[in-house]
Length: 487
Ligand code: NAD
Image (cartoon, rainbow, N blue to C red):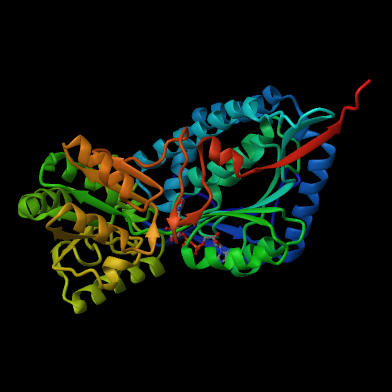
């Protein structure tokens, strides 16, 4: 994958790839610190063209009124193409994001699953009849918004984009997508595959560019009827303010500081095994990272020992190597942000149980590698316990009672996900019911399946992705009242 000529990526507007008119930037491979491609970003004129193309396609292609199975066919072809090209696309994603190849291969599958799942839902978009008494016949229609704006983050570009693009198109909308500047590549391939799968030109447009310019403009654009955003909580709040100007609908998938609670009756080996993917996949750069582990007093020492032992065994290195567990973080800036958190945590009194700094050594020095880190001796007011680090850093603390574990978990301003480890069935359901989180898992760690709604409580978001609820985010209701006078 490495080497060769540098390709220049750009916009995808009205079914064609072309350079944006904005600034040309280099895309840097996180594992090596070297540029590997260029991105010709969009300028405001490109965004205008994309919005025009999307409305034209929405009005002229008739996509919204295609037979549901015909829309499904396009999305299913895209799912099949993704699976066929999984190796190539995963390698592109690994080079761009730095995520280990074994994870990006899985992610291409998950993106394909999203297209296949939302394809199946096209046949479930239906309204209802509403009894109103004599003389009236009432029915509801579920209609697309028209043109929707989508903004995605850099950490899991292929999956997070696929969730929104598949749902938005299945619902019959046209889309203008502003991908993360650092990681636009896999979505470019999805656009080409959808085109080859028969999606009418203009229904999907990509406008890479700076968030503060192109992203903000997209959100405020008066002809964008709905904005679906995934990214940080702070930018999400800006998006909501921007969309309020013309009351565009918003859904927001934002940050998190998700707890994992290990009760004394848990299988602590299973909990320690689970902590690894829940925290260290993608070098911890996951909104759902269970980055705060609360452990019952009785098992605290034993659990910590098991966790530290597992973290020590993680192999940091070239994400293209099959043995690699932890690749680099996305950028030099992100690496310094994570190291800054570690420095302040130490200053606040936290102790490093394992890791704690930049990972260096042969093959690592020019990339942006951070050691997987476990911090102990923390308190609930510390920055590292309250804020999202978005790197491979987990804090472990102890608790005495179930009530305390619940209250302390809920003290976060976030509420994206939570995991409970216990063998007590009643406790599992009792605690799950009280945790303020959009997804709670019990004795397992994976938080998102295409079939079920995914999203945040509190400052972790608004609205849902995936499941029937995820499709509903891209649809609005119309009620039709018909006079049926007596003969
Ligand atoms: P970010 O908020 O910095 O950027 C996200 C996207 O918004 C990017 O495309 C960016 O260019 C754009 N953007 C930036 N400023 C903007 C503005 N003023 N108006 C409109 N768009 C703007 O987030 P990031 O650093 O790319 O991603 C990491 C964050 O995303 C973390 O906080 C993480 O928790 C969150 N995230 C959430 C989920 C979820 O499903 N809840 C999933 C993945 C990531």
